[in-house]
Image: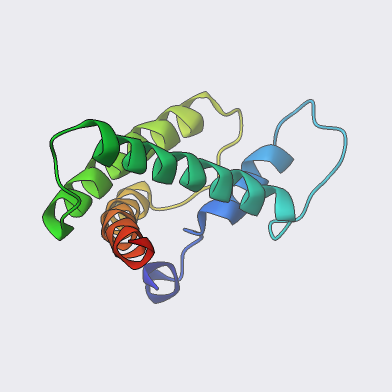
Length: 124
């Protein structure tokens, strides 16, 4: 939503595809809507979801909405740091408004953490 509002390229799967496509030693060209970016993005999301469930299982923290938003915030910080490192080391990163991208990334991950609680409550 924020991406559309700001008319920016903030969709993570598309940015992943752009980064892959702009690598100097990649022989084949992929479009920004290629399934590879979605696969990578959802695989990382699946790993984070599994880590959330492991966290709930092996700690004394209860799976509450507040704790879900805190975990989402932490995941957002990890995501921001990962993207910053990726953009820094990439030879030809896309030209985007990084502060806006990181802001929406943090909000999206907080919502991700809260929705993981909703999913957990749905399962139990």
